[in-house]
Structures are given as structure tokens and as C-alpha cells.
Figure 1: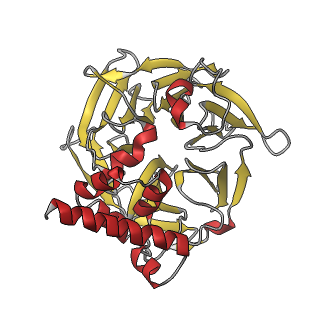
Figure 2: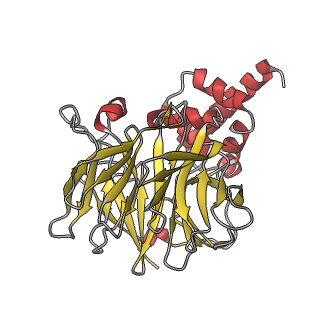
Figure 3: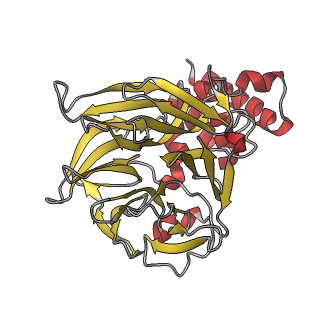
Length: 375
């Protein structure tokens, strides 16, 4: 298509979609908004929320080997621990020792100073907490908390720019983790998606040798990671395309990868439950405007040149009214269950779903609370 026509088309999409987001629901909203999912259960509005005073963006949720918590990382670089209704949240750790300027709940311009903890995982053998900090790489904390220690910050001479999520194979003593992009940092994630950046990587860290191996290159926004129950493969979310990739660790397809599932939105973190099934949190479903924008990098690159702010660009991608969508996949990648809060009354933009003791604990990179839902 002629570049000029592409630019005009992009501008028209921007005008229509932003107008819709301002003017509310109508016929065009139904057209540009996210699609419905067959068999979905609209029951997440009944979930409870646990507010996090003075903080924003509890991306990931983890319980320690004693079952205490949850623990979560927030936008100002702290890791907090939930101590129950009477005590509430307490500070457990930080990912950076340079805390003098880290006084606001949300300050993207200071993330490289304060840190931004994303994926969290406990080693059940040692009680250590492993952290994927978007700016400081893979980190570790002892059971007492405090200031995190860096483990690794680069692979093959390429520094991590957006460390995102991980899972631990305690049998093999390795950690599988993602670097979402080698071109964009976390605070530039919209640019990474809009330009169809494909520099994300799935990596492996060996605890004993301290070596890092790149397993998959060229991922369009590498995100959530989860190891299968039998440890034969690891899955990774490719957020921009809406795909879940499967990398084989054992068997006839060892060291190869394929598409495990295709989802109707932007998958974030992936967490395995005790049955070996995978909960995938969709940041949002993908509406018509998002599909059009992501059909050609020209659209996104042109949008980034327009006088349009983050909120408007984000609204264009997600389309419609923001609401939570959680999808449970089988060990074969089949969709088993879809849970939603279709009106966004309680939960929106969830980033992780952790199943524990008959409850779903849901984090969100864009809200000041976590959700707790009964199964």
C-alpha cells in the first residue's frame, strides 16, 4: 500500500477509535471493540480486591514455601508481602539500593533507577525469591528479604533491556526467563508492540555454572513463562501476536519450538496449576482497531509520530471497555475455561493468574490492587 494511504488510514483509525473511547458505547464501539469468546463465564466481577495503598502495578504474585503471602512487586521497585487483613501489606524487599528518589507510586522516568520487579518465583527448596526486574535483569533474594542481588544482566554480549518473567526447574537447577526486547525498555512497551518489534528472547540460566543460553530468538514481545508439569517443555507468551509458543526440552523435538495456542488478545504471564494446566492472563482482548494497527508496522510507526499520548495509543490497541480475561489451557494447549469481567466492574488489565487453595489470585500491572476470586 502507498505510504501516504497507510498514514491516512492510521489517522482515521486513531480518530474513530479515540472518539469511541470518549463517547462511550454505540454501534461502532461494538465493531471496534474486542470480540466475545464462546463459552466464556462472566463471573470475575464477583471477585474481591485487596487494595495496595501508596502503590501501583502488582504485576506478579508468589507464595513462599511456607504458604505465606502473596508477595508482589510494584512500580516503585518494592516487593511487598500481604500479612492478612489486620496487618496488611509490609515491605519485604527492593530491587535497587538507590531509593532516594523513589517516593512516587508511579514514575516511569525513574524505573531504571528504582527498578521494576515483574515476574516473581520462589525456589521451594531454598526459600530464595527470584525476580525478573525489567531493568536490572535476573535477581535473587534470601528468605529474609532486603536488597536483591543481581545474577545476570546479559546474554551473548547483548544486555537485557526488558527482563520480564521466569519459571524454575528445581530438578535441573535452571531458570527459564524472558527478555521482552533488545530494543525497547519496559516504559516503552507500547512502542515495542506498535512497531512489531521481534527482538524478544527466551533464555535459560544455569544456577551452578551461572551460564545463560538463548533458546529462542525473534519473539514479538516475549512475556510469561511456565514449565510443564512433566518438565518436557516450557511455554512462553508472544504478546504482540497473541500466541503461546512451546519449546521442547525433552523428547523427539528437543530444542525445537512450535505454537502451543493462539489466543484472542495480548497474553501476559502464564502460571501452571497443580493439575498441570496453564492459566494465561490476557492484558486485554484484541479488537478490530488493534488487529488493523498490528497488520502492518507502518500503522504503528505512523501513530507514534502523531501527537497522541500513551493512554490514547493504549486505547487504540485494546479497543472497547477494558476488562479482565483469564484463560485456562490444557497440557495440550486446548482452551478449557474462560473467565471474564466483561464490564470491567471489578478487574481490568490483569497480568497474572495464580491458582492456590481453591482461589485465583490476579495481579495487574496497571491497577493499585490485586483480585482474589473463588473457583
